[in-house]
Image (tube, rainbow, N blue to C red; front, side, top):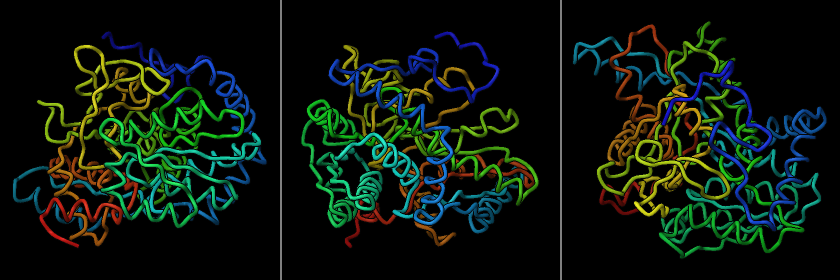
Length: 416
């Protein structure tokens, strides 16, 4: 595929049809089109509305706990500098974590859920549905539904229900109904399919609170804008703490909401290297991975055109990742556009590498990261030792790892 022309700004939104170049769009059932257009109209009205923004800022500050901290990971930096010294490399850069794990509910997902619940309330909706993989978006959706008094149904693949049981229990405690999905491999793709079926059936009173920067327009844009608070804060914080911008920023990419949230405010800073980390699973040689931008091709899924894992007949493949939140065979369309434009690099990390980064971070920082975040940390572990001591890396710590301890224990042959 030809590389698209470099735009004047990488921070432009999609066009009127919701397209980022050849990616994005609104590929939905005819029944849903009026609802999508109504959502777009309401989104266009509120995104620059001072009262809406003030209410969101108040909730983000006093309910969710923003701003999240930008933390100098001294223990990890020291460890990687020792590795650098032992190998005779560049000295080792300073590593910072953007601490989205400290938010209420334990991840970045609350940022988007607060924005969308206010939008649902404005639109007069009476019921919330959501999909979830790792469970963090399900917990955040159930949380805001409880806060605003909405009934909430969360669709979750049966495989993920089994490996994310603590989050399933949290959702139920919050009053949400969790509906296991047994179709396919019982993971995030299948949960999203069922949520879309529900939405088609209940278009009048239901708001679909999508958890990632994918789906039909305007979801990729509005989720990105709600999550961009991550990068806006990180940019200001690193300027305050170090007096300059970072050399590299890194985030894990499943559907891509935490990553686009960190990346977007930095996209026009040409000196900042931006790296998204895909789930390499058990390797890209087979089919047990979710690296759609490294091993996939463009196609249509869940209402948008983007890079997808497909077989020779164009059928969507299920893929695999140790991380339930990265276990998705596609990616948000803006990431696909950024990949083809060359502005952002997308790199796979294997299950085993993420597991080692999970253990290392826990041991040297006293922070148990989500397995999704551990993928991003694993890439930092690879590149930081070869960097210079005066260089700076920010890793988005998108969530805490409480939800993953059963998965990790199983991988390590231990019982809880």
